[in-house]
Image (cartoon, rainbow, N blue to C red):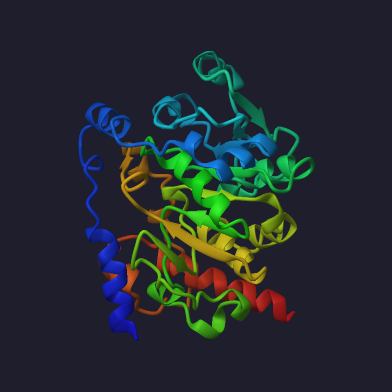
Length: 326
C-alpha cells in the first residue's frame, strides 16, 4: 500500500509548474499569462453566481501586513464580492496590527475589507478562513469562501476554477492540493472513519481526485455549511502542534463531518509561486515541537519534503484523540 501512496505523492511533484521557480516579478507575469476558464458560457455556473457570492479570505502577521499586494494581485477578482483580511485584535494574543498599513491596499483593491477585529483570541493560521466562514455563513451558507496563504501567488485561473468545480461538487470542499494522511505517517485508525477518502479517482491520480487533506498553500474553497467553526476553534486551541497545523486541523474537522475533499489541479490552476517570506523565521513548515519523550513516525512527507509538517500533524492528531477521550 505504501508503495502506491509514494508513487501518487511523487506524481504530484512531477506536475509541471512553469512559474514557481522564476524571480518574483517574472513569476507574477508568468502566472498572469496563464489561461482562465470562461464561466460565462457555463449555465450552471452562471445560475450559481446569480444566487450566491464568492469571497476570498486570508490572514497575515503584523510583519507581513505591508507585503500582501503581490498575493492579491495574482488573483482574478472578476467574480469575487469581497476580499476578507482577517486580523484578530492581537496577533498571537500579544501584538496589535498597524491598520494604517491596510489603507494603501484598500486603494489598490477596493474589495478588501478587514474583519475579525472583534476576536479577542487569535486562533492562529485557521484565521485565514474561520472568521470569513462565520461571517458569510450567517447570510448564505451556500456562498463560496476561497482561502489563500499570504506568502503565495496563484494561477490567474485558480479562482474561476474553484467556482466552476464547486458547482459540480456542491457537497465537497475543494483544494489545489491534497494527500492521504498515511503520507504524513498518520494511521488510518487515527483518522475519522467517516471522512477517510476511499473514492476514485485516487488522490493525486488525475486533475480531479479525492483526498484526506486540503492544503492552504494551493488555495481551499469552502461552503460555510460544510465546516464546523466551533470544532475548528476547539481544536486550534488544543496545543502548539494543532495551532501550527492549520491544514491538518481544517482537514480533520471536515473529515469528521463526512465531507469529501476534492483536489483540483489542471492547466487553469496548476502553477503557484512562493515568495521569500515562505521560508522566513515564522514559516509554519519550519516549526519544531521538541516534545521530551516523544518522536514522530517516519513518513513519506518528512523524507521528501524537508518540512516539519509530519511531526506537527502526527502530534496534533494524538492531541485530538487524547482530548476526545477525556
